[in-house]
Length: 229
Image (cartoon, rainbow, N blue to C red; front, side):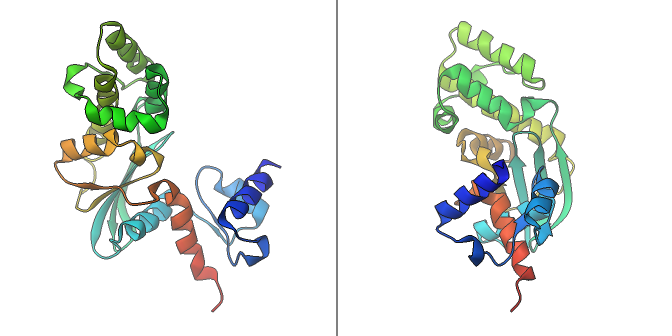
């Protein structure tokens, strides 16, 4: 089964034997299916998991924080106090406000998703008119801009700024944004994206080490409470 293969590969990469696992937690869209299969000790939604993991990785476990996660399918903006989530929003109109749009942008530019961020940092978003409220129109804007001679770095910057702008307009108006602002998830590694969020919020955005593993880190922290002392 795919889940067994994935679990075996994860254990191998971590250098851990199956019998050494003291507790297991699952999160994300497949948490119930995977949790039932592995008889997980904890099955937890992403808001709680991401909040716990983000402040831990950023070393900001005490006091207020704001956690941002622009995912492949939806976006999360969470107000956190002492590692506990308070007010939050989940959303994103179409896939144009998500990591999927950035993935498609990278493909159109002929670069890998890991290269898109560095390219975007070199560009100027204001040089390109980008409409990604719908992913179809967003890609059309991207193609038209490239055909008109726009520089790839400007298109990359505009795509990052467009996604950040939608997060700002649709979700960050609904929560009390307080520093530190911590961005997590795989898209946080696309350097142009946290840079765009910084420009809109006018505050420093923290991207902690290993931010792409936020779900695993948060679930591990929470499930550790199930281990017998």
